Image (cartoon, rainbow, N blue to C red):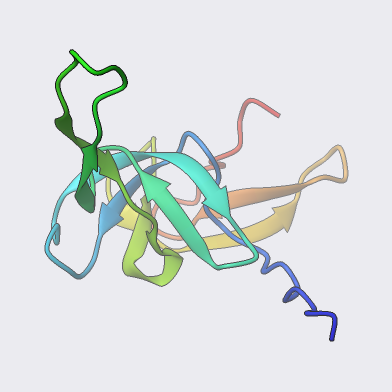
Length: 116
């Protein structure tokens, strides 16, 4: 039986955005998005939801170690931080003059995607 992948979700958070964590052990912290996984509706945020990975020694004389790395969290547990008003905000999408969809902050009304 062939397993069908779920349809990717349209996410309002992109790689490089700053987000505010709404719930969980890192509630209230901010971080930069490293990776977005729309099929799983998850994101990886730098410094948030750190898990400890035990690494075996590579050689016979080497030492093992414990490294901390960020694990994915659900996208619904974070909120985008507007770069203009520096507040966590919801996002709406509108068409710009060049007929592109851009993200707009619902608090201050400024465009978030100014580099595109």
